[in-house]
Length: 95
Image (cartoon, rainbow, N blue to C red; front, side, top):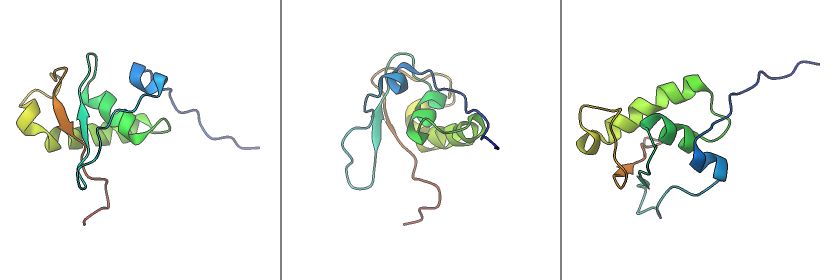
């Protein structure tokens, strides 16, 4: 029998603990409050869910940066606890 390849486990503490990250949605916008240790990669991975591949996360984190450039600035590797970031719109949702 053929089995699917193993998907790497996400090790971000918030994912492992299953804590909700998104504030209550306002309209169609979703916001996330950055915690210590977060990165755009980890936020994108958490938003995509535990079955997201590394390549999918690699495609998604730049969308987080683009959606939050006014907060993050020119250094996507430098986000701060307490920053409020907007989750990008899901792909394929043009409404």
